[in-house]
Length: 405
Ligand SMILES: Cc1ncc(COP(=O)(O)O)c(C=O)c1O
Image 1 (cartoon, rainbow, N blue to C red):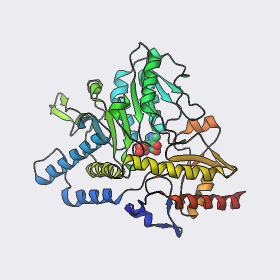
Image 2 (image 1 turned 135 degrees about the vertical axis):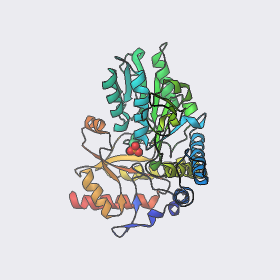
Image 3 (image 1 turned 90 degrees about the horizontal axis):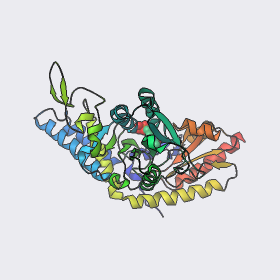
Image 4 (image 1 turned 180 degrees about the vertical axis):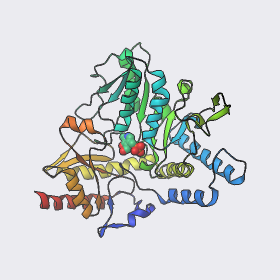
């Protein structure tokens, strides 16, 4: 039995091609809960003003709500202090800020940036660019048959590794990387050398697994609001306060200044230091409510919900010998193909059945090339997913087979 959360998500009342909506693309973007929508509506209708820039009532209310959201997020991921939380437009911007605020100013020629070979483009393309600018080299951590990071067999001169970046949950194979253990293994591999900085991409994890950045033993943690029942266009970069002194701003202008003269300017403290310009205040407020929503449900209940649905989906998909499942998924998403049906064709037929799945390379092109597959279909669960979604998917797959095979 699983609890029914579908009614918390107004969009799920929609019909697609006259069919019940089976939304199985939560790893792409989750749907937004009505509690978040109400909070955003309340901000926009009753409190909207710019933050940190005025003494009038609305400006003070907006500033308070923005900082209250920062506090909620900091507690949600176990930050030490709220100023470790930088609001961004999403995980992509978060990782770019880490790359251009820390990477460009701290990496040198011949240093190594080590990234897993199954990262989203957002977690290796910025590092490729930083390496090009600094003369550092980018190297890759191999993935074993299960989809786990193979730190032991990473052939690299660890004394030169200055940053390791990897995802907590793969957005293609749905495999969980145990961050704490990986950080320990990195420490072992490094030996007497200085520990590199560690960045974790939490995009696929933060609404499915417990996150405590302090206990992880890492330096940066990035994620997006729109994959955790929150608004689009808001995200977070957590930066451990011990490394604030190693950062430089990446955007310059209003909101990040301590004092400005015609000759030169000095900058505000963190987090304003990295938040130039008018922020996405309603997005931040909504994100705070998304954290509340997840807390209310309880991450243990979310894990149970994911586990039950994953077992059911994997069993049903495995019954069909024409279906190939990639890796050993153990979180909330599954990449698969039906033999001889291109994933876009499959996804189009599924759409006619009201089933939304993602198809393509999921922004992990090199890994797909390495497997010698051009694209995969991906189903992914949210808290509103249920057994009917899986039944609808399986029916849709039979329909596609009837058409194409
Ligand atoms: C693992 C991972 N990292 C990064 C991103 C990029 O997130 P965004 O597009 O919200 O910046 C995604 C989005 O699909 C993702 O799945």
